[in-house]
Image 1: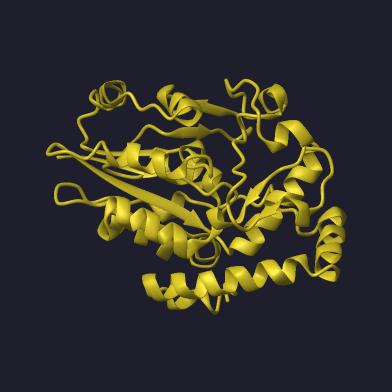
Image 2: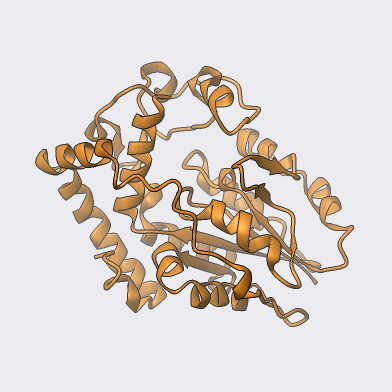
Length: 299
């Protein structure tokens, strides 16, 4: 049976490190996902990924034909555009529709403390200037009703500045007001756990923990290899050839990061956001039996 594992996100959770240093080196896995070289340049060998992200259409024949040349039956595809707040349920349903008597679908979601993730992405927006300067409190959408369809917005600015994507235009709040809408429930790990396990089955969902990847890299990657392995192939990696996760994108030491952190602590935005995520993280830890999340500061 053919096994297709999708690493669907989140962005800013060492996905580039995995795509550049880990996935291409896995034994008994045909990695056909997003590649990032040492210069940060991207190469995507699966054009259907962008069609999927933009129009939520999945050409099953095109996808399977791109995997068929490999003699290995264990396939891995990694790209963050596979999962967006915009029509998330529909995207997951399309990926799950690949399941049949000849194909098994599994998913990997790399995670980090959601409070840090949301704030890191906010600082990233401010630093790039793609959406101008906006207040974090104005962007937070706790109901998940004004879904941002980035990167399909900003009138092509994103296309020109980074990601080299084929998206054109858009009509969401980002485009109209230059305000990034942050769909808070999208980063709720308890809700995401329920969506993934309901759609794919609990045994077919794996959570890769960024903080553990930094502190216990070998153990966390071995845990992933155990998940990727199947009855035919044992997935493994030579840890001696791996380095530490790339910290080139680290922003916490920058003055702008410290300033924005201080502002959003003093106005209570981060406190409110932390309470929301603490509760969700605690529930997520219970569902997954991840006892290490509390010592890692998730709640």
